[in-house]
Length: 294
Image 1 (cartoon, rainbow, N blue to C red):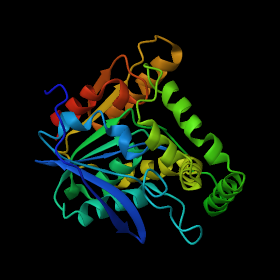
Image 2 (cartoon, helix red, strand yellow):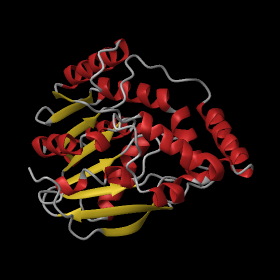
Image 3 (spheres, one colour):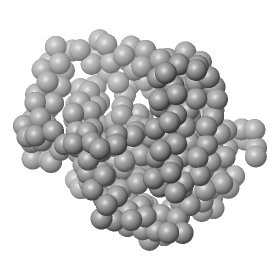
Image 4 (tube, rainbow, N blue to C red):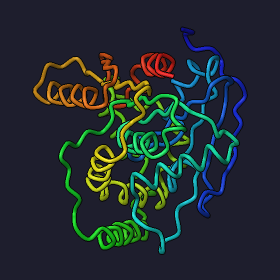
């Protein structure tokens, strides 16, 4: 595998998906893989991984509404986030790029729900599935009143934005979260981009809406697992982050990742030392998992 060659020219655009302009980046050549990040992630969180992939793959990244450079969804009239809805958004992004064939789907953390849902709902679109330290919530149960909770998330984000909370604290909160999620204890994302993307109320609203729907999406995926099996020949890899600490918390997390791999009939890998933002600590391991899967 290369040790970090220069990436080919980036093809950046905005695609209007369900009425919302989404920031999309495509680079490289070869079979298609799509990278999508977890709660609060932006396209640049994959920057260290992409150069390992572009000599062999066409790499697609996009920002969900409110994140990165993508516009926010309208303040009213849109349903709360769902795993199936995010799966359809991914499919629409690929279709909008003219990439209608099978694709290796790579989801980090919460986005693991999204890509697995897509592989189950549209098996013909999945060439492989890579779950990077993906969220695991066995026997999850949805909370009541999803519409009311989503309205509350919007209202809280609106109130915080009116008080300039995202502008004052957003980039700092992002950097602190990233530092706690890597063994490096640093946010490797470009500081100007962090300031630009996390000072906005749209990012806070997106995070609150997704966070407050987290267990609902987990329960939704549990139902899909019962009713929509993965294609039998689909290669699946579960890549778990091992921070190297033999604490009960680490061991419990790795055990849950192993259980996920068993449930999906997946190849199970660990990479150490690495925190939850595996893309920062071990981009080479993430790329190897992608290239070996599809």
